[in-house]
Image 1 (cartoon, rainbow over the protein chains, first blue to last red):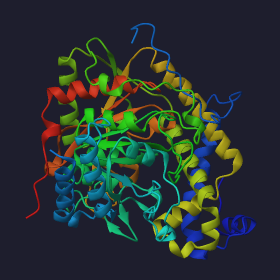
Image 2: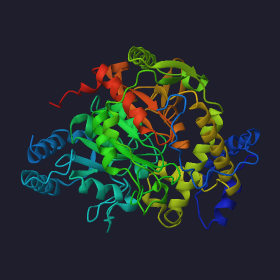
Image 3: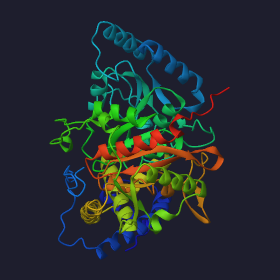
Image 4: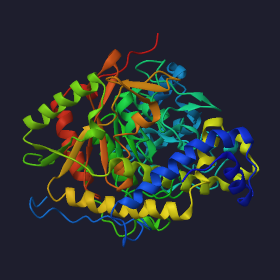
Length: 68
Length: 449
């Protein structure tokens, strides 16, 4: 999934933001890369997992092998 | 040394090292008054503990009632909080003396401390070098003796990076160990307040003071707080230590590699059992973490992005705007991967007690240096500097950086020790044992002329 400056401008307008054209043009390649990176997360075994929200309260359980 | 003499000495150092630009606000009058009060209390037999009368600083995104808290930005240049952060309250109750508010990367969103509004902070080991960030003022201050400790925050390495690049100790506790109430967020689910100090024991003492449940921050509830200072003398013989060895962790500067391998020899000599391990999915993990930081920080700043974009530095503005374009589905996908990463980290720690790796793959770059050469691989500075630290924010695990030698140009190198969530005692014990066996924490940068 890639996005260009015009697409970002449209998204920005939906958020009620006005972002200058030159800034959108700088952002577009970085946002496209981010979208591609995040697309790849689908290839990992995350189906059926709940998001880590709220952040999981850590366990203080000691390792039974060492007793520490 | 009396609190008054100690505080006067720290204030004199702040004056001597003005070129560092380590502070945004120095609270000299308050510090002298607090030191005098501490001296009176101690003299009257009301000793509060090891931080009583000890001068410290706070990163300038930690609220201090009645004292300007800028977050390193023009957006909050005149902001004077009406309440203290929980860590501020706890340090005051422990009797600590507040020297001032330490410089940071704007809104903690970066690792160089090149601040568009307040100027760059410099590294005391080389004034042309960055101190690392975003808690760079704290790292530079502690290294140069501008106070005994500083409280920073760490979202992807922002305590450990300046600790490593400035040659001091930095401890990022577990997620939920220290309250973030009154700490301006960069990324709610990744932010961790913690100490920078000269020694592991000092860091443990500060952590003891600021840790624990806080009804204002529900992520802190339900914990029991161990005796961190006692952990400094903990027995480390026989502990199983994983040495991260995968493509993501192999690329380091030559000098860092040498220092790290020497540190591994020291750990073996201390009786630890070392074995190589890998962590899966590192590139995907970092993509997910970046998306979470971007989305959460954009949410924090959404109103100001709409109303006051001109008050941000250009780099911060661009990063925050980037985050506006993370979709809800992508954000939740990233958090689902995080659940997987937490599980896999837990699995790894069924076989080991701690992980070790360099804190940062390179020594401090020059101010304005955008790329770093890692043995022929030229990479963007920001990505390199956070490469070894950010995993532990993602999984909420404690991670400690201790000085482990010097690399290129005589600049400090840090050894990072990470543990299982809520097991700070283990990383403290290993870090302190390493520190006792090596001289690196005793080295100081040369005083300015």
